[in-house]
Structure formats: C-alpha cells, structure tokens
Image 1 (tube, rainbow, N blue to C red):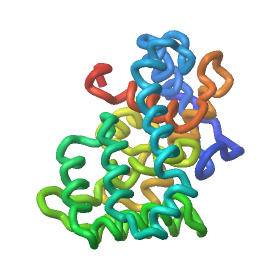
Image 2 (cartoon, rainbow, N blue to C red):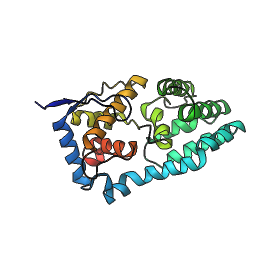
Image 3 (cartoon, one colour):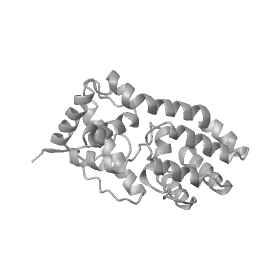
Image 4 (cartoon, rainbow, N blue to C red):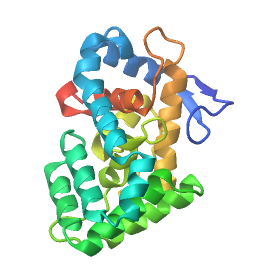
Length: 240
C-alpha cells in the first residue's frame, strides 16, 4: 500500500489533502518520458505551453480589466463576446461542439450582454471566488442553448484559465479523471459543474504542485503548467 503523508500547508486554491507518493512518482515519470526536462523542456514549451501563453497574452491585450470595463461602459457586448470566442478558437481547449454552442449562445443581443457582463464579474469583479464562480455558472445556465448545452465543465473554466492562469485552472473531465486515478487522488467527480467540484480540482492541482515543486525543472509557473501535467497523464495522444 502506498504511504500517505498529510499536507499541512495550502499552496494554491483550497488546502491540499493527502498525497500518494507512489502515484505522484509514477505520474512524474510518465511526464518525463515525453518531456525529460519537465516544465523547462523545449519540446514541452512548444507543444503544450506556448499556445496557451499566446492566448493569455492576446486576451490581456484586448480584454484586460481596463479594456474590458471600457467596452462594457460603451455597451459593446457583442464585441466582447466576439473577442472571447476568437481567442478561445485559437486553442484546442474546447471540443468543436462546445465552440459551436458558445457561438450560438452569444448570437443574440441578450445572450451577448449576459455573457459579457457576467464574464467580467467572474474574472475581475469584487467578491469571493466562490460567489463569483457560482454566479458565472448561473449565467452559463441562462444563456440560449440551440444545439448543445452551454453549461459544461470545460465552458465553465476555459475563460478563467485563458484570462488568469495564475488563478484559474481548466477542467477537461475525462482526462482529469484519468489523471486523478493514476495519481490515486479522489476527485469526487460530478458531471454537474459546481463550486465544490472546482475546489476539488484546485486541491488536486495544489497536491501536484506540492509534489513537483522541489524537483529540478518542475516548479510550476502557474496553472498552465499544472493543467498540462494533468493533460499528459490522461489524454489519448499521450496514451492515457
């Protein structure tokens, strides 16, 4: 049986729970099979990190806090929605049916307004992270749904991850569940997006950060590195 050790200090997000050292070592070795230098590996930077960083840079240039506020004040809700859709479309984070659902949801003036105002509140507004996340879920639930549901885990987490990867992580359910099993971490997965489920993901990421932090080349810069580590554990392209 794997030896467990209690994590006594929080790192990012909620307080991390127990660590399964055998699972942690196994997952780290799997990552090293593809990227021997860890998060500093040149191939990793090209294959996994660079396009996500580019999306964050583009987002901050066009929808950083000050620019976003000005667009809201001018009532340019459709422009905000169009920029968000465009920036996300240059990544492979959402499935094609999710991208289509998002485009459909913001086609109407009411949909674009709801999306833009609630997205700003989620990313940059005052209040607790829990309240803002729950309000964002409610907004996604209220958006028009023509072909596919808008309220999914990827949709709920993709814009926080793109805009503020120092604070938010992206949740791809199947891949993340595979990674959690490999890590021997109990994710308590529920297909319905919720704050409790997001807290569990943040805790999983905190555990990974804690385990990797002292390893050469594995000091995570932000949630881009941690999400990429999870991706390598569970994605089909990596034999997950």
